[in-house]
Length: 307
Image 1 (spheres, one colour):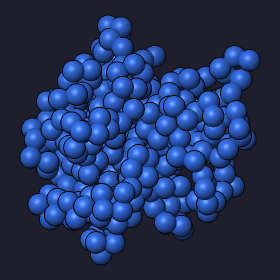
Image 2 (image 1 turned 90 degrees about the vertical axis):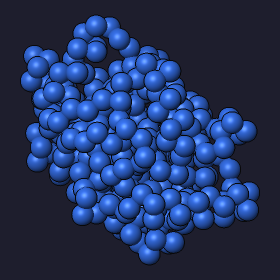
Image 3 (image 1 turned 180 degrees about the vertical axis):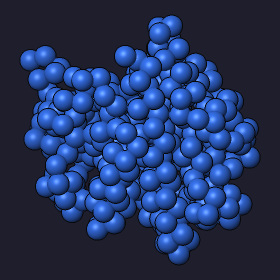
């Protein structure tokens, strides 16, 4: 079998790709592991609609029945939102989950790889993985970063997940040669907050300029991703100092309970939402919608300059 035999592309997405129209890839871990039912599926549908309103076709990606599904129907979205035990799939898990026909929600790294296989160049998520706090002892660095070094899919997020070591993540992105550009501000955002205490390496203020950067990078055969950081809307942010205290408390609880590996992020997101009285979940929903709007505009601008 050829790798394309493992792809199942939704007809609407396939038509858009064939015609050179804008398509935006969306991950599915936010549905299965990022939010509770029914908010998860309601948010996923809203995000898809926002992508459409901004000139692109949404392609939510997941692994179902041994296939890499690029674009999901309503039944598949509901299934991912309600089913217990859906696998959280990173790159290393893909062959196992596909061969065993286990339902899987794809992380940033796996979504990027599948998007690339399908020919999609723009991927919208909430926040990327990176270098974990304490990585000098645990060596815990997300596969998201190494995948970004190799795969020509731009990643639009609200920065790096604030549960991580943002400074070390930015250093590692520089080592890998991945451009980091923040939309509309000099400060690098930290997922729930507009600021992180770090200055963004690059800044651009409109979708057309970002599309131009992407085109130039790939025209020059400079392999790999670009991280486009889009700050959460000011009205919905949780201030950085306030969020940091909540994160430290949740990290301490995870350590005391011996939670490790792929279980850490879902535990922390759930616990942070509880500790913040739902404030973090509201910010999470706001930022993914905000990212979908900008991602749609960038995909539309990139399709225009690529024709």
